[in-house]
Picture 1 (tube, rainbow, N blue to C red):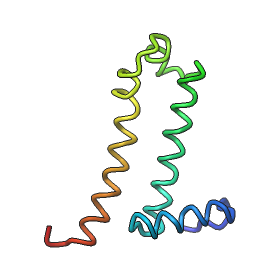
Picture 2 (cartoon, rainbow, N blue to C red; picture 1 turned 120 degrees about the vertical axis):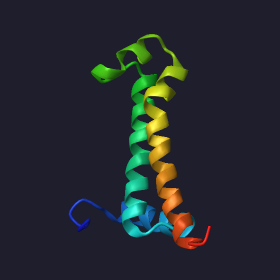
Picture 3 (cartoon, one colour; picture 1 turned 135 degrees about the vertical axis):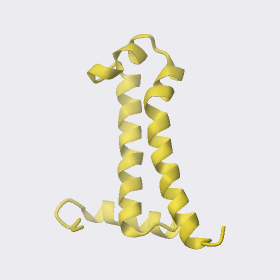
Length: 94
């Protein structure tokens, strides 16, 4: 996948840092970077009272537990899946 058309120097440095610190391959680091950014943006939108249509109930009720149940758990699950890939690559025998 060619990332040169959207990735500036600052993002490239963040991706390389994720590769060094987390053991990701480039595509894994990019996926993690996007997930982290999406999680932060969703959290900020919820805190500011802005929400896409499917999130109205969680934001309207100001119910943090419900927000985590419906949104954050999915972001965390994808981040864990990336971590498992690294662990399986580093420790193929378990």
